[in-house]
Amino acid sequence: MAVRAEPMDRAALLERLSRHRMLRFVQPADLEHLISYAQPRVLRRRARLFATGDAGTSGYVVLSGWIKLSRGGPSGRDMVLEVAGPGTFFGELAVICGLPRAADAIALTPAQMLAIDGRALMAMLRQNPDASLELVRMLGERLAHTTIQMEDTLFRPAEARLARALARLAALDPIATGRELRINLWLSQRELGEMTGLSRESINKQLSVWRDSGVVRMRGGTVTLIDGAALSEIAEAV
Image 1 (tube, rainbow, N blue to C red):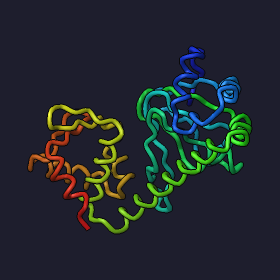
Image 2 (image 1 turned 90 degrees about the vertical axis):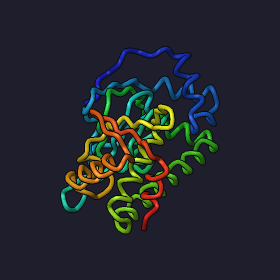
Image 3 (image 1 turned 90 degrees about the horizontal axis):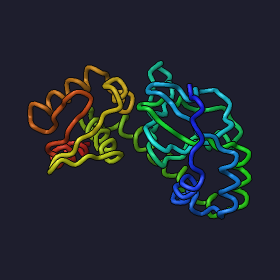
């Protein structure tokens, strides 16, 4: 579960949030008011922030770390909907619609975030239409991403699904080492399966094939993309 963090430096927090793609449209006085109703939260690795069905009374801005948003499928197997990293705003849909949480939120790494009171969030959106419009764009992008992920699971071959998942993870937090690109895999192979609709055994087998052919290198909890062009070609297979 989330635990209360020490108070943050208010000026630094306001400056940071003013660069957020939605909150940058908020008038300074309204942003000050919003922050006055917000609470810092910290999560240990693998701690749960909320569960499907919980009351949605707050929205969250990730300040550091990574959060997995997932939902149980009809077969009993979870589906990873999003990996939320620094700067991501999530949990707002339950607040806006007055609905229970539609997903589980679990920390993949130690994480720090800001919990924004739902009533204060709604008041801010009413006063700042440009921020509301940007939120609509963010929700639209999230829906488009989920739709693409579902289409991949239904129509693309297994190796293409895994290649596209690795590409998405690499784009979240890329670490370049020369021509190579290292991915810090906060997701286990089981969770990669939840992103792609593949079994853990299939994930392990495919990664081993790519390792042997020089496409990736695996070490500990990381995967390094050695041949990005080859992986991109695999990702586009239909």
